[in-house]
Every structure is written in structure tokens, then in C-alpha cells.
Amino acid sequence: MNTIVPKNRNILIAVDASENAKRAVLYVKDLLVGLPGFHVTIATIIPRPPEDYFITEEEKNTWIENQNKTAQRILEDYRQIFIQADFREEDVVSHLVMKECTSLAECILDELKRLSCGTVVIGRRGISRKEEFMFGSTSSKILHTAKDCSVWVIE
Amino acid sequence: MNEIGYSGEQQFSPDDLKDRIAQWVGTDRVPKRLNIITDTSDFYRVDYDDVVVLGGRSYLIRNNEREGRFGIDDQQKYWVKRARDLSDGSVKIIKLVFHERFEATVGGIIFDCYRSPQKEARILDLTRDHPRFMQGFSISDASNNLIRVLEFIKGKTLADAVLLLGKDHEDYFYNHLPSVLDEFIDLVQAIQFLHSRREKHGDIRRDHIIKDSTTGLARWIDFDFNYLHKENMFGYDLFGLGNILVYLVGRGDVTVQKLQQESSPALARLTANDVNIIFNNRVVNLQKVYPYVPEALNLILLHFSVGANTYYDSTEQFLHDLLEARENLNHG
Image 1: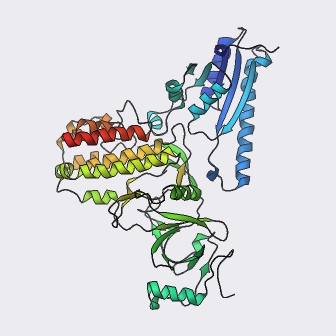
Image 2 (image 1 turned 90 degrees about the horizontal axis):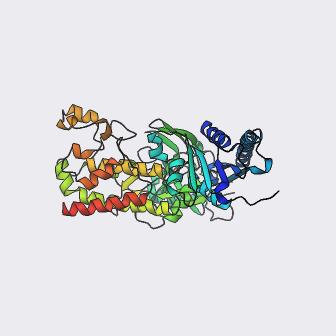
Image 3 (image 1 turned 60 degrees about the horizontal axis):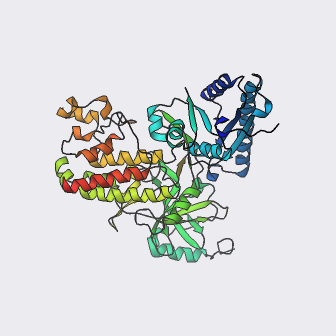
């Protein structure tokens, strides 16, 4: 049955292979279990290195293939967490994007908009102040720049 | 075959090349037997006195470059050659292709770095005729290696030049720093130009700025470094700019050790928050060492300290504050 889910019940969980991403998945599952009317998209965005990172085309293709395989496995594992908690199959989908990202936060927010989700859920990686200083923090950037949506940052 | 070239490029005979070598480096320096190279894939085999032919021009190879100007340590860079352009006798730097990929560690943070001839070639195109960047062009050799042919910049690094200014820090601060800051602002604007076109410098540090003795202008060099960025694409470049600013304001590194050696009274005023967030031996809160450093300028420096509450996200923000601080220096 295809029903239109209101934007605020359309939730995007941005994940990677980390433990904090898994915590975000488990948090949403525990929060929504048994509640009808929500749609969950579990999304992985793989920042693709610039073309000049790869020395050969073959190396690039192998990299892409490996990254895709790993991400698909993780997404399916996370999706099964919901299915085993009796979420309907059609209410939990996975979504994989690979693209060059100036900022991962911006890429996540672009997907949020594209998929008409009203809530974005991320796990906080807990990076050091030094690392945030030098390379920035995705969760901080999302918190500061997200518009017209709710942001859940899971510790 | 007596003529050397490839893909229809201009051909050179060995005698012609020997004549040119004699013209530019002297008859007594002409090698008896010429080794002419069109494929530079194995850069270890491109050696002193060889002639590299690229796109209709020939270059007599001299020594390998050493660090301080190109690379990381004071080591020979076998893929970076000083050369004489046999068309006009000018000195060139020829960077051959070296696909290096490694994990860099700065302040305990590990990130992926690599050398990219393509990136350097793009930036050379992007910054053509820009007075704040080294100049040159890229060209493929016979095996499609992307070689960069760079104008040699004669001059000291900006860092070395600054150390010669002023009889002491106070004299430097009042009589030289304003013009040093003007120059630095131009250099930051040059980096902003790159960032606005989604290019990183990639390896911003003080020995990558050469004060060109011909034009008198400081110029950025060495653009082939790249790193896989995380959230902030330009964060590492900004960190480099901050370090240079602290160095310029301090007229060199002001380290805790140096202050201890001098038994500086400033030591009593310093706290753990006053040092560089990454390099904890460098003092960033320079106002505590030199009380005449004005607030606006010192506040910029503090963005790079352990005690910082906010960091710069972009070169625009950094530049904005810098221009304001420079303006205040006029009215201070």
C-alpha cells in the first residue's frame, strides 16, 4: 500500500560503518517501534575521492566496488534491525549515494531535501577538539546549517 | 635516427642540442655523450646533464631539488629537477610524476595525503599571470606523464625575509609588520581565490612562500599536495594560514622553550590555553608576550589556540578579521 507519509514522519538516518551510526539506528528503532505512520530511510553517503586520487581506472573501479559492497552490507544489516522489530518492509528503505562532497554535511542535507524527509538523524562521532579545528565536524555543521527540518544527534 | 622528438613535435639533432648547451652553460660543460629522454616514467634515471625533451622544448637537467623549497624534509627530491631551458637559457624547475600516497600525522590526527600532478597542473592554469603564485605550465611526456615546468623563483622564503626585519620585536612590530601584513593579506586573498574555485593549496606552510627578488612580491609555490578532507575541505589550509600569521606577528616562532631560555616575565602570564592547538610548544597568545599587540589582531591568533571557543570555517571569515585588524593597526 502506497500512502503519502507527512514530511515530519519521513525520517532519514545517515549512517556509516561506525558504532555511533549503529547507536543512531538503534535509538530510532527503539523510539518508533510499534508506532505506525513513519517512514525511515537509512542512507549512506560515500564521499568519493577526487579523480586524481586514483592512479589507474582499474584502481578506481575496485575502490568503488569495495565501498559499494561494504555500504550495501551495512545498510542491509541496519534495515534488518528494523524488520526484526516488526517494522513493515515498505516503511524502511536503504539508500546509497556515492559522490564527491565538498562537505559531507551538505551532501546529507541535499539527500534529506531530495527525499522529502523532515528529520535527519546522525550519530555523534565524538571527535577531538583538534580534529574539529582542523577538519570540521559533520554533526556540528548539520546542526548549524540545517533548515526546515528536525535534527537528532545521537550520543 | 639522428633527430629526437615524439608525436610530431619539433625535432632536435644531438649537434643542435650540444650547440645550445654550449650557448647557455659553456663549451666546457657540454656532455660528451648526450642522453636524451622523452619518457620520464623512471625519474631516478633522469640525471644531471641529461636532456629532457618536452613538447618541442629541450631542458638540460641539473641537480635534484632539495627540501625547504619543495617537499617535506631536507632530502633530495629525485622527481624535482632544476634545469636549463635550452631555448632561452632560463632556469626552470621540472617536476616529474611521482604518485606518492601516505598517511600524514599532524598533532596526532591521521589523514590521507597524496601528490597529484593533475591538481598542480590545474592550479597552474587557474593562476596564470597571478603575481602571488608561482608560474609554469604542464605538458605530457611521451608516456603521458604530466610534467610541470615551473619558472624558478629567485629569493628567500617569506619566513626568512621577516627574520631580518627590525632591530628587535617592537621595532619590527611598529615599523615593518604593517607592510608584512599587507603582503600576507594579498597572499590570503590568493588562497581565497583558489578556495572559491574549489581548489586547496594543500600544503600551506611558511617555506612555501617565496619572496620573489625580481618582483619583490611574495608568491605561493608547490601545489601538488592534496589530502582527503573530512567535513571542512579547506580546514587544513586555514590551519596553515593561521600558523603563518602567528609566525609573522611573532617575527618567528615564539616557543615556550625560547621564553624559558630568556627567563621571560611573560611565562608567568601564560596558561595552557595560550598555545597552538596542534603544536603545543608554540605560543599563540602573543599579546601576553608583546603587550603592544592589539586586541583585534590577537583575537585572530587566539582562534588557533588551545583555548579557542570558535574556529574559522572559511578563508573569507579569516580574511574579514584580518582586514579589520590591519585597519585598526593604522589607528592604534
